[in-house]
Each structure stands twice: as C-alpha cells, then as structure tokens.
Amino acid sequence: MIDIASYKGFYIKKGEEEKVESNSTWSILVKSIPFNIVPDVKDFASNDWSDENGDDVFIPSQPSYKGYDMKFDFIYIGAEGSANAKIHDFWSYLQGAEFKFYESYSKIGRQGVYFKSFDPNSFRRRSKDVVQFAMVFRITDPVTDIVL
Image (cartoon, rainbow, N blue to C red):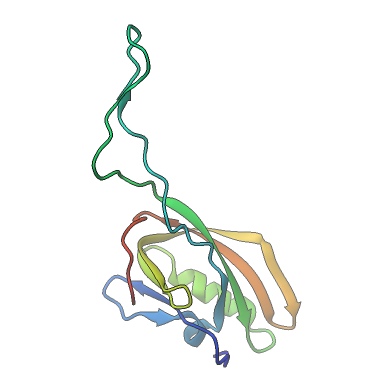
C-alpha cells in the first residue's frame, strides 16, 4: 500500500460485495478524473412539419440525460517487477460486472459504471515500478450521485 498522507481514496463496489479501495488493494492511485458534473441532455422529441415554420418541440419538465465515457488516469507505485501483475489484477476485478465508484477527493460517485477500454498510449514506466496508465469507463447512470 502506498503511504501518502494526503491521498483521498478511490472506492469501488461491485454488486453486494464489500467496497474496495484502490490504494490498499492494488497500490493504485487516481491521478485525475475529469468529472462531468452536468451531463448532456438527450434530444427532445420534435417534428419538423413541412407546411409550418420552425419546429414543434416537446420540452419535458424533467429532461433525460445521456450516458457518457470517462477516462480515468491512474498511477501504480510498487515493488520492482510488480506493476504488470497488480494492474492486471485491478483490470480483472473490473471485468464482467457493473459497479459503483466514489472518489473521495472530489466527493463524487456514480453507479451504473462498466469498464470500456484500456488506453495503451498512456502506459508509461517512469522509474522501476511507478507506472501511469488510463482506463475508459462508461457511465450509464449520469445523474445519481452516490457515496461509498
């Protein structure tokens, strides 16, 4: 586990399992998460009648919002020769299930999240086993804020 006094935890919860913290479980810290605080609104239902000017738009009192992708930047810090196995364990944990996450620095959490892709262009060995990498996650529930 990385001992960084000011580090705020990144928590993940799959189904009914106990939540896990990325630093204590895999020695993985969150470098940055560009949160989308206000998601995009889905298109309103409309008609463009050919014999009328303008549009006929239904504007609901409560709009629906689009899901979106988020790219999380992570840093692994560990013993020499350990990065590949720990990052693979982290990736394996995220497979095959929807999960929730909570990032305690920003105090933002989301549910309806799943792993979408690994960004190999961001995989860099900085020194021995200090590795920066990125993963893309899909947020299917863009409005429910959770705390783990």
